[in-house]
Length: 115
Length: 109
Image (cartoon, rainbow over all chains, first blue to last red; front, top):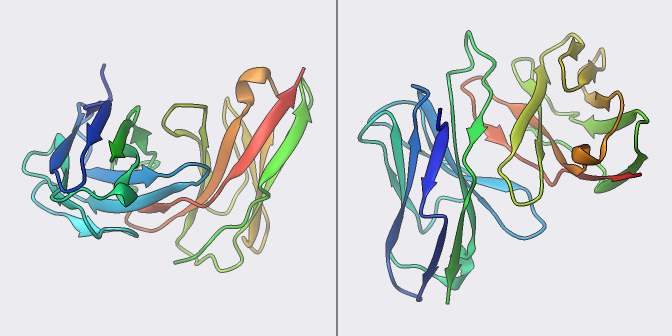
């Protein structure tokens, strides 16, 4: 069982370039999330989705876009990368909390550096 | 959004119990209290959660104050593998988790 898989695991971009991070989960979870983590800090929620075809903004959504065209995939896009977006990005998924623990399952992270 | 407050760091000795405190004075009646931990260079992993009553599982125990304004994560016998950052988080009704700074736990042999 793969769980939550993030692609790519490492990427270096130049300022202004675009890229997409892919998150895939094989647990049939409804909810998916994208977080970022900067050195010495906790995770901050970027965007989330409560079901296929739906997305919503989290704490720090500016500069990012997301799409949830398939239930198992959640894509995070950077249209014009900035050095401030250098971070480790974590994807997570969960069942809805009603009737479940609401436990989030996290991927291993994607380290992005913007020069 | 309701916030949590945790000490930045704590130390423990191996095989001794550890009590990790968390304050959440603005918690609402429907917020669940979750604890996650993050080992170095890994994504966070679920530890335990509760609403009003104390909870036990194979990893830890969660003690929730009667007024729900604070909680304590209890590791009964710390091991070196328990060295991690522990996050106390409030989960809103529909599932969103907002992480705080967490407590960095170091375990001495």
